[in-house]
Length: 628
Ligand SMILES: [Zn+2]
Image 1 (tube, rainbow, N blue to C red):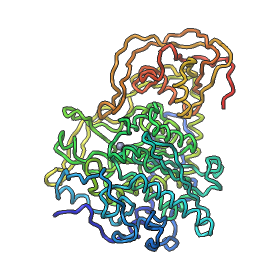
Image 2 (image 1 turned 90 degrees about the vertical axis):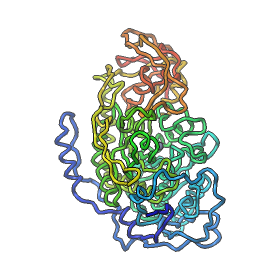
Image 3 (image 1 turned 120 degrees about the vertical axis):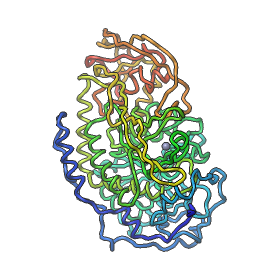
Image 4 (image 1 turned 135 degrees about the horizontal axis):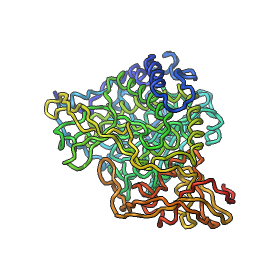
């Protein structure tokens, strides 16, 4: 058979409702209890097996609007109407598409009808500017901004007329891209105000949803426009009784415009969340500092054919690949929350929509390397760095890179289903999550000066059966692969955990970035002595930063050193800095400042000299400047 990627059927509101508001069973509750007993080595407070907050998202079906009027009137011509729900039937309408951009030419399909038939259209049709059937380009940056502004305007009108009781929506410009494009966000809340303090006072946890850090992965961005609309005045709006949401649909607008993975200067911004070289990554870091999300969700797409076809003569089979934070020093409680409260419900939500899923994995760009690796373990991605800010941090990937607009409705449906599941999990577990976060923040802080800290860890190689598709017949093809598991981390380098780090007065670039990571850095006001460990360099070479795909795009090259810590007293002059580890984000200071890892500020030349860093091994008696 042939399958046209643009084929549509009428929208069925009941189908979208089923995707967004599925029923819940008791399976994950039982699993939670079982996992708790299996995990007895760490002293943990009682693990809540059932949500302590009442569920809020399931509303009687009759109370939700079944359909919306089609957008009419002159306003609809120039902007996406906020009541332009994703349920709108495709086809003619006043919202004519603007001139099609040249940036998204139709890709020649990498496979034929037999494979395509494995991915039928979903039971509903989503409609954003970029998903309209006549379109060849995805939503432009200008259209994306208009969409968010229209939602905010509509919420304001609703609030003024009393039709949408208390939902507030505010457009945020969280930063600007390297080419000067605004990086737009939308804050949705039922708090008394839209500033971070009002959100904090609301007692509701905040979620940050990020799309399109990689410009050639459009489904996440389109899906987040749908989710924004459903939160503002659709099926997801009741969740705002329990949570606040910040949506950043497109973190890399330059890459989206150009159709490239990287930012305008060629950097992979999703390896830049510790170093913060790009304004795009800094903008996201600021959002996380401002809103302290309990969940950060990062929407991506993965390569469908490409190197899988070349290496394995196979096509990717799964609709969604999922992974949560897997990096050294991530609190065990947050791993449990990620697995039991988010990952298990996600699997169920996708399955209920007949969508297949698996752990996220990738393979290197080296065609001789047949290994498959889960998403990386280094503290450089959004998934891992935001986890170390004591959040649940999820990666949602759909099968989309290299296939243009093929299956775009199904890709968006997969994203919407997964994102809605994660939002529901947060709403259901809001009180439990706050409790867990408060516990791990205290626990992490209390570890300063004690025990060992993992400086570098490695994934564990194993074997696994993985299902692909035959590129000719579309049939399942099971391969046995070498599988590097990020779920089992092996510490390969550990050290005594210091009380903090001393930094020379000249290390201002590092201090600025540490603060952008949300770390407290204190300036020493009067000279003092400290018991410390300084680094003795024993070997040095230059190299590239690597991830499981290969060399990381755009990196200027790193210094790989080997060091031996040497204990001695040092004098800390006035104007130098102290980074205490008795703070909730301490693992990020370890990641940035232990010099002999590829992500460290020394390896990446943010810190010029090894003598500018020392490990402070006893709580120092120092006088500090007042900090802001
Ligand atoms: Zn990506």
